[in-house]
Length: 156
Length: 228
Image 1 (cartoon, rainbow over the protein chains, first blue to last red):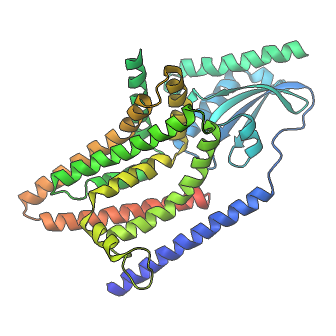
Image 2 (image 1 turned 60 degrees about the vertical axis):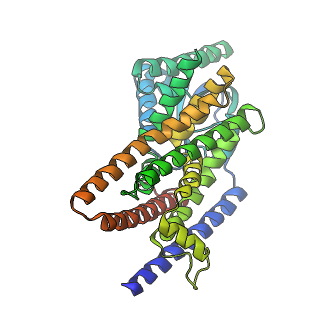
Image 3 (image 1 turned 60 degrees about the horizontal axis):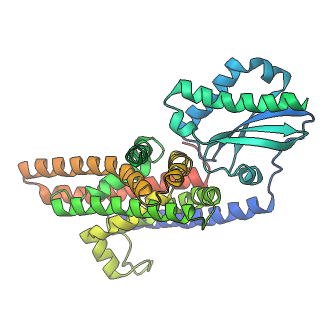
């Protein structure tokens, strides 16, 4: 009993040390190769980003599914002709984009784009407090998408 | 108006606590608070200090951000990245200390004899730093509701103390209620069957094991990036 307790303790402590080393190693690799954040598409269009952390939670997946379902239902034509684009982004990987949008947690960001550059954006943090109220959630997202589409229409 | 804002902050806290994402730390906290089933003062004291730890962390963070000392989005991303990575190994070591398996051993001088004795006695004061560490280990739900929901409300109401405190109490309350129910129910049963000492020993094993399992879960999901 005493021997197996010691073996288990050492195994767990070894796991701790390996994990710490792995975490340090991962960050040193990541920091030296930051990915490019923005797309290179031409023209004016609206990007709807679902920004999430590397760790995906159930509630985050629900927010993503609700947003995607709304776009598929109400913005099918815009998605088809490329006026609206859907992007799923890990903000812990895409650090430049996370800084640009001042992301605090998983959220939806609606951005007006011109030739691959962000012209204007709205970060929708209230998805967390509205997700229990589907109507208000959908209106909140739609208002932001419609605002950016109006601006996009004025530009083209 | 401030009353409604305090209730909203408290409700955000409850929503955070009952969401699935902090489940692993909540289970560890419940077992930690309720582990001295036979000592009501210990359970109550641990519960109070755990809530105080969480509240202090959120008030300090809220104050620093609302006073403009630190950028809200940067600190949120920093804590989500690094606190969760540090949490896994920390919880495994804490679990081993709670089991009394490390702390005084000659092979690994991670602490002193006094540390292990305090762990063995189950020092009630441990609940305070555990509350602080768990509060600062933001998962997507707690980060979304604290940084995206509570802080804008606190800024709007110019309340850097009351609203973060209400949020902190909200995040701790469901945990404390479950811990009290578990502790007092097991104390009642163990007295009925005259097995209090044995129940307390098993509760200590349960707490240590809960910390180790939660630590392994956090390491796998946040360090190795495996979504379970």
